[in-house]
Amino acid sequence: MSSQSSFSHQTDKTFWKYGHLIFTGFYLLPLIINFDQFTKSQMGLCLAFYIAFIILYVKAINCDNTKITTLFLAMLAICFSATFFTSGTPTLYGFVAYVAGYSYNLKQRFYAALAIVVALFTSSYLSDMGKLQYFLAVALILCAALFSYGIAAKRERDHKKREQESANQLEQLAAIAERERIARDLHDILGHSLSSIALKAELANKLNQGERYEQANNEIAQVADLARQLLSDVRSAVSDLKELNLVSQVAQLKQRLLEQDFNITFNVELSVLPAKVEGIASLIIKESVTNLLRHSSTKNSAITIKQTSQQLLIEVIDNAPCGRLEAGNGLNGIKERAEQIQGSATFTCGEQFTLNVVLPISSEDLQ
Image (cartoon, rainbow, N blue to C red; front, side, top):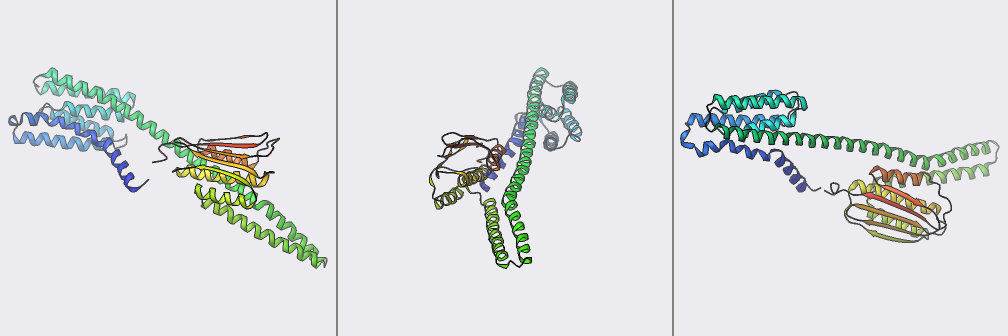
C-alpha cells in the first residue's frame, strides 16, 4: 500500500471515529437562535460546558473500562448543569447514552441508563424548562437511538477484535508450519548427502589404513563431489526462500524444465497479487516443478496459472500414466501451504497426473 493510500485510510478511520461529533453542534442552536436572550457570562459558561464535554467524550471513547465510570459521571454532571442555562442539552444527553452503550456490559448499561433518565428528568424540572414535553421527547428519543447505536458499535468492535486475534493466531500457526516445512526441506537436502559423506569418509579411512590408496583416493574424490553438490543444493534452497516473486519464479522454473528436455506448456495470466498469496504460490509452483523433474516419465507437461478477482488457480498436468498415488513430503507440503491461507490442493491419478490448487484472494489483501 502506498504512503498516500495509507494516509487516506488513516484519515477515513479518524473521520468515522470523531466525525459524528459535528452533531453535538445542535447543543449550540439555542444560543444562536436566541442570541439576544443570553448574557455574555451565560454564553461563556455554556461554551465552557460544551468544550469540557467534548474533551471528556473523546477521553471516554478511548479509555479503558476502569476509568469510564468517572468520565461518564462527569459528562452527566455537565449535562445536568448546562440544562439550567440552555435547552440544547438533549444532544449532549444522547452522546452520554452512546458512551454508556459503547463502554458498559449488560448489567452496567441498566444502571447507566437509569442514571441518565434520572438526571434528565431532574434537571429539566428543576430548571423550570419551557415546553418541557418537547425537551423530554427529543432527549429521550436521542438517548434511546444513540444508546442502541453504542451497543451496536461495541459489538462491531468486539467482533473486529476477535477477528484480529484469529488472524494473529493464524499467522503464528502459518509461521510454525513454515518452520516445519523448512526443517523438512533441510532434512531432505542434508540428510542423505551427509550420511553418504560420512560413510564414504569412513570407507576412505579404512582403505587408507589397508594401504589401498587408489580406492581411498577415489572415495575421497566422491566425498568432495558430494560436498560440492550439497553446497549447491543448500544455496538453491536459500535462494528460493529469499526470492518469492511469482513471475520471476515461473520464468526460472520454465528455463529449468527446458534444460532438462521437457515438452512443457506454460499458460500464465497474472496481475497484482497480495504478498502472502504470491509467496505461497511461488513455493507451490517450485515444489510442483521439482516433482515433475523427479517423477515425470514422459517429460510432457503443462502448467496453468490463472488469477481471478477472488482466486488464484494453479493446475499442473503430467501427461504420463499414474497408477497409484502416494503423497510424499512434496505433495503434502503443497497441501499444507495451500491450507495456510484457507486454500485447497487436490491430486488426481489415472491416464495422467493432475494437481489443482485454489488460493483465495480477499479485497483487503489487495489494499
